[in-house]
Amino acid sequence: MHDETTRYLRVNAVAERYDISKATIYRAIKAGKIDALLIGKSLRIPESALPLFEIEAAEAARQALNALGHNASASDLDTDDTTAEIRHNAAADGRACLWCGADFLTTGVSHLPVGRSATGSQVFVCITHPQAKAASSAFLNGTEAGEVA
Image (cartoon, rainbow, N blue to C red):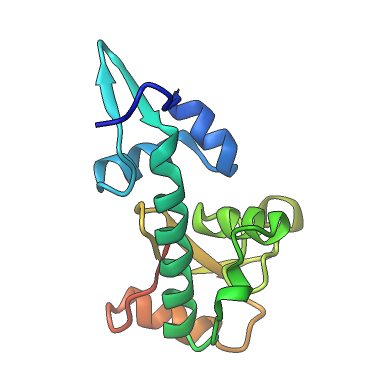
C-alpha cells in the first residue's frame, strides 16, 4: 500500500523518464519488474516503485556484461551518471550497442543480437567488435544467456 504522498505516473511519463519505449514499460509491468495499478481503464505506476526498478536494471546489466566477458563494476553503470544511464537505457531498449553505446539509429552501424533485456527487448552489439559474432552465435544457439535491464 502506498501513502498519500506517492505520485502515480502514466506509462508514457515513465517511458520518457528512461528514454525507452512504452512497450518496454508494459513488458516490465507484465514481468513484475515495475509495480502498477489499474485505475479504471488506466495503468498508473507509483513513483516510489522506480528506484527498485533502477537498481534491478543496473544489476541485470552488470551481470549480462560480465557474462559476455566485459567485467563491469558498479561504477560502469552508475545510475547517478546521466550520460551512462541514457546510453544504458538505449542499449537495453535495443537502440544502441550494449558494449560501446553506439546509437544504431544515427550511426547506421550493422549489429548483431546478443541477448534480451529484463523486459524482453532484444539487445545488440556492433558487428565491428571482435567478439560480436561469437556472442551472437551463443545467444542464438541458447548456449549463453545475455540479459540486461
